[in-house]
Length: 522
Image (cartoon, rainbow, N blue to C red):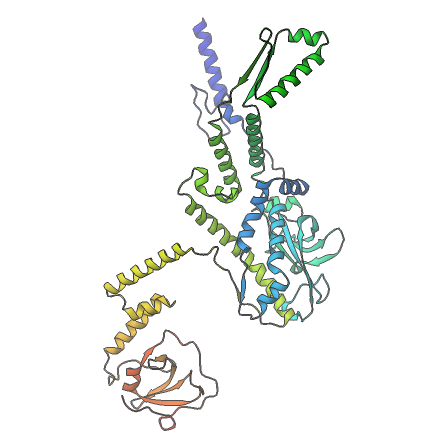
């Protein structure tokens, strides 16, 4: 009977387990119960997102050194060496006077902390609710650049058109605690952590989540582990004082006698580094330090988990070398990973920098910037420079020995020219050297740009005929000067340039053999 009962109960359990798993696609072990309702691991559920409030984020930023590092380090490293503008002489000095780097850095830090931050552009070129038209900005229009955090930026009007490229984003903002509205072009908004559109809309104002949202619980656990270790350190060595009849003394109201006795023992231990006790009724012992040998690996693992949640190498998060974390050889890898992240941060900031730079250029009466140049993330050491030069020398030697280049080619490459361009020009010159200058079949066409090998001038072909090449010298004092060279002289002295880089001035007179100058035959 018992066998039948057990079999029936087992079948019922199996049926229940299978029924519980009908709505999910997963493996269930009917023998051990793994994956079924008896498996404790399947009881874990993802809870609904609870975004951290801005006051909590501010408190965490100001009180936790690790939280501050997670927020600050990336934009600080990206902007620590500044930037320069291309194509606008004088704009770098203007940007420095406005402390553009510092203001961009502050706005970016508040954006990472709160999920949104911005730089308010105080441009007095019309109504604040009207967009900024860069071409209409005049000298003296820019009054201030003000970094703002999320608490000071409110989406006043949200774009609710699904077909719009800015759907769900504000088209107008209100700033501070006032109802003053400004057009979105007057507020450079920086993002926080990558956040889904639905969550941004739920946040109010279309804001991202903070970069501290994901590592928040890991930060809390890390702090708990650290405090627990400190408590263990305090309790790792404990003195024990045994007194006969201790409980009777306390019960009999003789606590003062007990306290006086402890004071005497403590004073004697401090002065004489010895303990005086009654041989008959007292005993004093010292419990040795607890075994803490397993604590260090545990702390390292906890910090590794935090670095993973913060998406930054542990050596960067803690500000120490990787070797100090028992990760020998990981230093170069950490730097490469972090350099890639910093470069991505620079790309993210570049558009905002160019936009503000264009407005400052108009305000200062300067040319518009064409780009942003970033310095290297760190300087080469003498050893790194020597190693790099040694590699270049070995590479050049290998190419010369293989007949790919000659010493003159390598000198040009060393000066900074592109190797592919040098090889192409060398190939063209070798082809010209094998051509008979009197061979009319070699192609010389109008519009081509050639280089005079004697003075490096750029020569543009206008026409070919009667055994001559009619051209203008683009680098001559008078670029409209007309020349007619004998074809074979032209081929002997010149080689093709990759592409024309400049055209002669419009209105140059037509070229004719009798109107030009002809060098003596080679």
